[in-house]
Image (cartoon, rainbow, N blue to C red; front, side, top):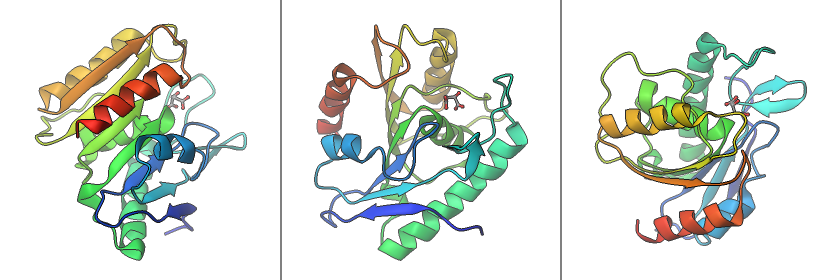
Amino acid sequence: MTEIHSAYYPGKINLPPVLMLHGTGGDESDLLPIAQFLFPENPKLGIRGRISENGSNRYFIRHSDGTFDLDNLSQETDWLLKAIQTEANTHGLDVNQLIVVGFSNGANVAAYAWLHKQAPFKTAVLLHPMMITPPTKPVDLTGVQAFATYGTLDTIVSESNFDSLTQHLQTANAQVEIFKNQQSHRLTQTELLAAQTWVKKL
Ligand code: MLT
């Protein structure tokens, strides 16, 4: 396994740990302020995607025409799930308890891992996710809870793509709360406050 670039921030060990998955160009610690806002006392783990797109970190290859390399996506998701297990073992964390905080590319790999790879985590805050490729087999996501945000001014993700993602999650029995707001493919205080309200109900 190649070197894992990770960051770990200890917290109260009786609280579920947070897994931070960054957007394109982020790294293992850049979502820390968001994770801290949503889950101030929980332990936090960040893992950097090992793909570089002109120097920007990602979790899987995106071609220059904007399409995705689905073989690479599958391979890199397997790598990420192994890396999560390795890091969880190192820090004494239970992967089933992890709460994902993912933005854009990081949210996409988390949703893909649920729909295609039986990812162990059950809870996620998916900030501006999209459906990369729909599942080809029925999936059972009973017990999964997600908060998913969409900006109606997003120029990267179409509303129908976002809706297709949340519908696939719901069809698989996941409980999904959807937050749509007039904003672009960026984080806003409004959506983070809405996410915080959702987190408090967990
Ligand atoms: C992706 O590559 O997952 C999407 O284009 C979102 C992004 O990272 O910009």
